[in-house]
Image (cartoon, rainbow, N blue to C red; front, side, top):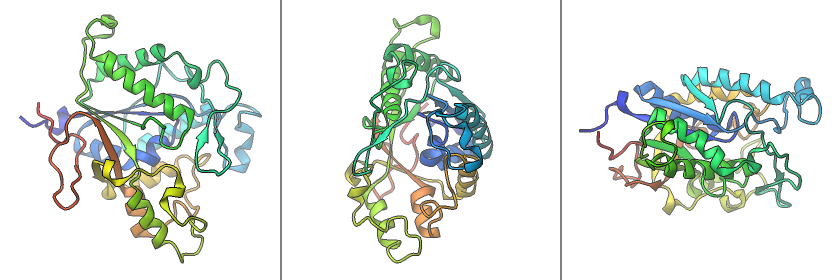
Length: 307
């Protein structure tokens, strides 16, 4: 028997408020609309983020250090736009602090700052952090979990840690002998990592070549972006173009972090739809379900799952 929409349960593990919307917002909105239960676990409040709004610059970590609380409100607003009602912070809001990051000299990858606070997510005990996520997994019982790859997409330490925590928690949640007080063991059926196919990014670069305010003006190849994935590893494409307006509204809910009017997000319609309306994933646990014969990709995160 194939899973019905009401029986489908999707859990996403992201590092900071706004990560979920940029990378998986259309997917989240699509599954909510279909009747699936969508749960978001955010690992930090994003206290170390930059502030794009000048009048809110005082919120920054090196001034009032109140950006995290502000980003919680932004998350509330974004989830309202996507229709997600089940969203939580790992271990509770403020349990783990944003670790911050530094850029490599070529600006292609993020890295870990030389100095890390002891309460930062990067410094967290892995078993402790995973235990909090096991509690959620055994409560929600998701068939599908989404998080980042082992490099955190582009190297941010909190993204890497989110990957580690989600991977460890998935194994622990399935072990009956691990903390039975957290609930009956639960086996996740499929795990996906978020992905940006190289071909998709390359097409965007080429299509915007002569556009004014081209965000890729100094980029010749997608390989220079630092976070693209070779197409052969991409397994799944979720068409969320029907929910583009909701994703855009959710992105606008993060004015301290996202300049939606900037050239990178204000792309031409065909490029925007491909970059932001269709979201891509790599299946790393479980079996691939039926695929679109035209693309060879799954079109449903729950493809192949039976009740």
